Image 1 (cartoon, each protein chain N blue to C red):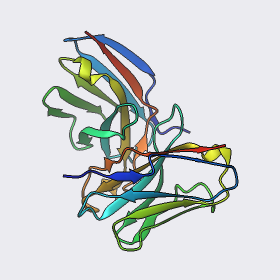
Image 2: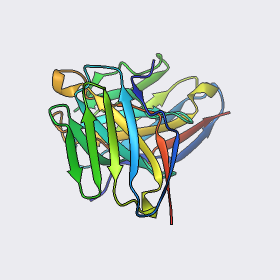
Image 3: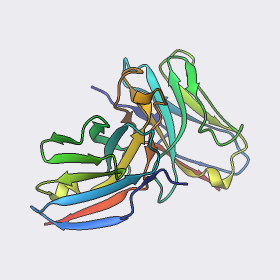
Image 4: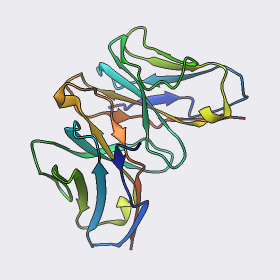
Length: 114
Length: 115
């Protein structure tokens, strides 16, 4: 079956611009996660959704970052007033349920802020 | 303050031999541990996991060992194959103790298996 997909695969933007990154989880997966991976680092947790609601957004670095999942499937990560330090690979993962222990990752979106 | 540490950035092994990747953690609340493998330009792929009630879990060529008293786990790959060449991430969560489902990752170890 289809895995987690993310679009775009690459995004180049200018400092100060607004960007949206999209994640399509595996069909039927109720839990969805966003992580960010900077160069030379492991993925760092940003936010987690169970259904439509954000169950844990403790990893969002500041209020420029926001994520939604209005229908409990596709999610969009939104970054306002981008900064060069936002450049990273943004990874999305999904799992079958809250009780499921395995998160399946998408290929990521590489964001470059010039 | 890194809660999950992979102190070896890289490891090189001959094909057919054993690869041992190590991971240390500091948070005693962690009760579930996973290993992910990552190829360039792809997302991490789940490999194997272990809960804190076990000290060993095996899946084919891959075995994970957990030493709770030392807060240490290791991934053994036997025999190693060139296709195993990738970056391996150790991850942990405190999910089963009523914590969060979020994973805390190490920085990764790049494994190279030479033919």
